[in-house]
Length: 194
Image (cartoon, rainbow, N blue to C red; front, side, top):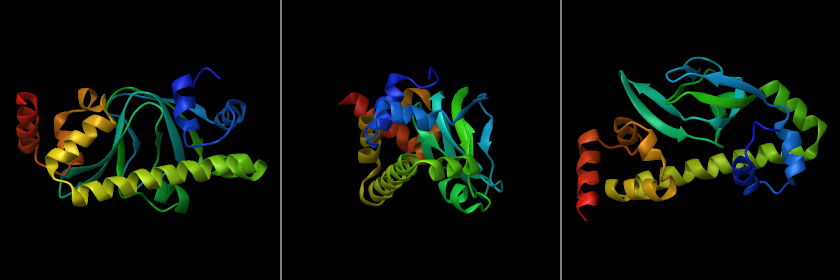
């Protein structure tokens, strides 16, 4: 299947112990979707009906609070994207998912995914492992937001996701790190001087 690069299969395969053939069979149920920079994958108040896998481009998840965007997460190539609680429960989302760049992704609906699970226990295992991976990532982020200072959070972001800061506007990175843009500018200046 040409939509999925070797890099995507390797990344997904790192936390899912399936053969490439089994993984490709699972991913074959997804269909392509193309979004432009600034388009929404999901708007607050909508029910999230799809799970996406980004093939090319970047997106971010954010909440609105008194007219201010609070960035929850960034998603790049080979990342899964959805409002997982809403996707599972069918309740309206309290967040937005928006394209930072033009995005090519593969999507599957909740009903299609449930049908896939019912047909093959290996596919259900894939879904469980994807969910566990997303939950572990979210838990790690909460931990470092609560326990690390702003500079350490930024340095960790640079180490763990090195290409992100070149592709994402700095004000969004500042929101993600839970700091003001001016604080991020000072941190970046201090780091560049050392």
